[in-house]
Image 1 (cartoon, rainbow, N blue to C red):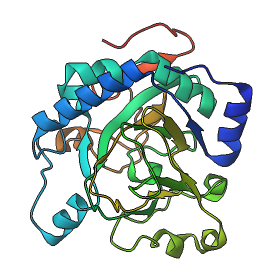
Image 2 (tube, rainbow, N blue to C red; image 1 turned 135 degrees about the vertical axis):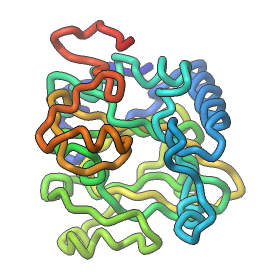
Image 3 (cartoon, helix red, strand yellow; image 1 turned 180 degrees about the horizontal axis):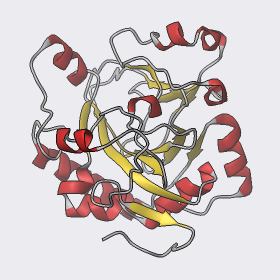
Length: 275
């Protein structure tokens, strides 16, 4: 794993709001990630969440979501192999160094798989959808297949994270809805981020991003994980929180339950592996 960051990469990320790291995984590591993600997704069947509280459905909205990408969340919870990958302290260290914070917890992982001929993913921000608000939140996006202009690679608006608020649009059928909230971004030039399989990107939780349609008969698999800076507090949004957990939290409560949001790296204990 190419996990050592240069000062130039950190500076680029903080200025632009994203960074692409080529050849992040070795060929052997890529084979392992593919095998485990495929197995974890297959075992989930139609359950998005580990507890089965959200299922794929046959409504028009559900059909649209399925035709955008197959999504399976928090595979680390119910798949031992994915737990080993996602809770790797090296990933937490990279995320912490890019964001400039002392430590990182897992918010959630997601397999995001564009099936053949899948719809585009509209422009959106990640962190405003989550149950905490932080300008230092970020995500990793690992390409398990080549992500190309033809099959749905990511697009970013470099630097726009600096002027983002915590407003976002849903990822609906109109890919430009976000620009109704941020009209100043409509004149910006987007940057495509095609990646070879085994490469990855990190992007800030307030970075506007989307993905193109899959205009091919092949699959475009990606594994992602959202990272929450240690010490983050509940903002009142439910997102993926189970109902009982959501009802037990008050705004301002620290989200530090290691059974839900493991601390995967902290500079005070850099070699501690979550159990």
